[in-house]
Length: 264
Image 1 (cartoon, rainbow, N blue to C red):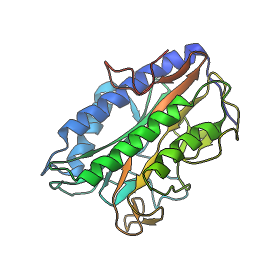
Image 2 (image 1 turned 180 degrees about the horizontal axis):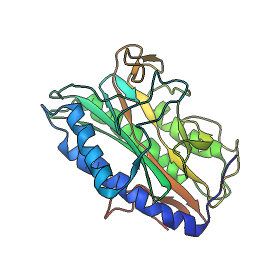
Image 3 (image 1 turned 30 degrees about the vertical axis):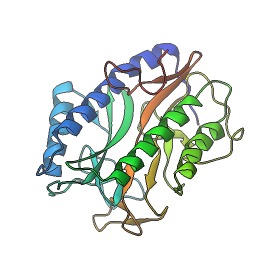
């Protein structure tokens, strides 16, 4: 079932979005050569505790996870692109790091992801990250009343094809509200003009993620981390977006920035 939020409820979701953006900004700034992934998770844990928020990840145990996640932030490095379970690993120069974070604040959830390079970047990694950002912006631009879900998905997929990238459809975006994963599913490719009609009050996480040279995933031995089947690197960008009468409202945009689309 797809739930639509009232304008008042969307306003109540703003603090969760702002907090997610703040945590991702802080953790990204702390990610440096020699920093351990467990230290990044500890930093996010401390911020959750200080805010009085609730992690969406610690007890999360879907059918594809080997056990409850047990950490508060996903840290995916290099050939890992999704659900990276923090472990004792010190970031090396040139590592491509994706951070995915979701929490509940006052009963409302927000979810976002960013990718960055630690230390000296490779040009191809920067281009891959930028492709996910452009795809995110393109998807958000289509998240308007009267459009269809296929318009959002097709806009994301078009950017991937421009870059010569394939798209995996196993994992994509989703509804967000009282829980982290709600209906509807938001695929990262599709046909324009198809799918459910977008209405004001729909809140969705739009999250393009791409791999350099494959669209196939393999599960890591930790039972959570998803890696590229051929060892190529991946990147991931995500925002929580509310569809309003005035257009898309990016709830997880960093403070001082309207996000990819001007906020209503």
